[in-house]
Image (cartoon, rainbow, N blue to C red; front, side, top):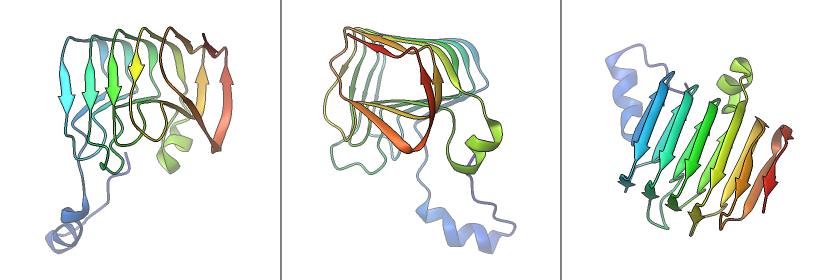
Amino acid sequence: MNVPKAQTDEEWNAIKRFLRPVMVSLVNCKNVLLKDVIFQNSPAWNLHPLMCENIILDGVLARNPAYAQNGDALDLESCKNALIVNSKFDAGDDGICVKSGKDKDGRRRGIPCENVVVDGCTVFAGHGGFEYSGEALSVPGNGCGLALQVNTWSWRYCGEYLYR
């Protein structure tokens, strides 16, 4: 998961001050409900569900300051059956990211996000309101105030995207 491989204490001490953790990282979880909660001021991404199934975010507020580097609000990665509703995202970087992976780990894993619904959400500040990278299948976005950014350098396929 893009974690440096430090073999000794000396190697770890040389890199640890440069690492910034994600606030909440959910890995291989099923049947997750995050409702009416606030996540803010993360050193990096606020919320990072990875390879999760049946995840609901309802009434979530995720925010980072405008100057936050890589301060994404939500990075949904390689997840299946996600419902993101009635939520607000205000980030120093991207608001809502739907990804099939990052760099070498993502390409090796090769698991797309699929069956993702985004409805009734607002994305405020940030570089991109809604970012896709890699592969995403069946991702409708309805009634959301956001901008769409596509990372074409890692783009493969995005099927059934709907934004009204």
